[in-house]
Length: 361
Ligand SMILES: NC(=O)c1ccc[n+]([C@@H]2O[C@H](COP(=O)([O-])OP(=O)(O)OC[C@H]3O[C@@H](n4cnc5c(N)ncnc54)[C@H](O)[C@@H]3O)[C@@H](O)[C@H]2O)c1
Image (cartoon, rainbow, N blue to C red; front, side):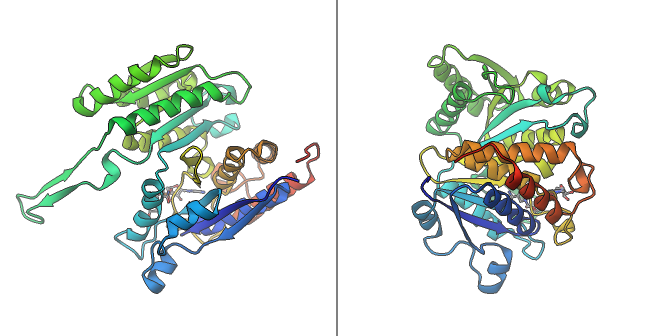
């Protein structure tokens, strides 16, 4: 019997509260030795008692749990979005979850808005730097609200931060396989070093330095604008992409569009050998929250990614094949062509998982 793995579940706001229960149900259906503890961090808690993150909250998560499964944060009642910032960005930076890993896989040809792109054509991973760049809230505003207002948003890039994310991308490329079992071969670094010369120069030099330690891996470089065009013209040749926080944020939404939309995209916020956090790529989607229409597949695939990260490969694969079956049989929500509600789609997958044979763990 495998040792029980302890997971913190934080559904958060909006559709996070609908999709995370489906993910928990599906994980439980695998029979994996997982114990979930739920936390109420999010907008309701903040509005009730002004708490964003309870005292020592991040320390507790790192100490008591092997992973964290998160829904989404963002609520129209909190215009400043302060709770989302403190919980989500806080978790990423204070727990030093420096590698944002977003697999981009096409489960079925019907989900891709591009012509003639098949599942085997779209199978790459974006590795986004998660703790630096322009999201560190460094900068300020001068002469606020006047015609002379000046706003400065600083872009922080450290050698340590750049090197560790690039090295992570090369290690990921060395150790992971495509869905068809073939090895990954190439790391592409995406930047805008022609215009942003200082930060870009650091990324360029570091990429070349780290690449020397991985002689078997091919390297490639693209400016972010050219990469966006290539991704919609022909996404077939991407393999592993490494980039900074902001470019990663943008290109992963573009990539999510290619794989069927935000409802199916999964991600992990990782710090090797430490408690890591997993979340669907989508936000809290206030207009559709509470209507039982949100697609739970992104959250369910995120849970599978978390299990694989914890070494539970068999339950992870079981969930992925059940999700694939749901997509092929159109047992899904309306955003990707089905007729089921959030709960019913989760139920279908949980039942597929619990009745599939073959695995022993
Ligand atoms: N990681 C996060 O917690 C996160 C990420 C992005 C946005 N947000 C927050 O979420 C709120 C809404 O932001 P937004 O509208 O820019 O992004 P969003 O991802 O919530 O929604 C974008 C669009 O995608 C649709 N969508 C998203 N997830 C879906 C799902 N599972 N099923 C079906 N359709 C889905 C929405 O209906 C909407 O049309 C804001 O407060 C924002 O700050 C949070």
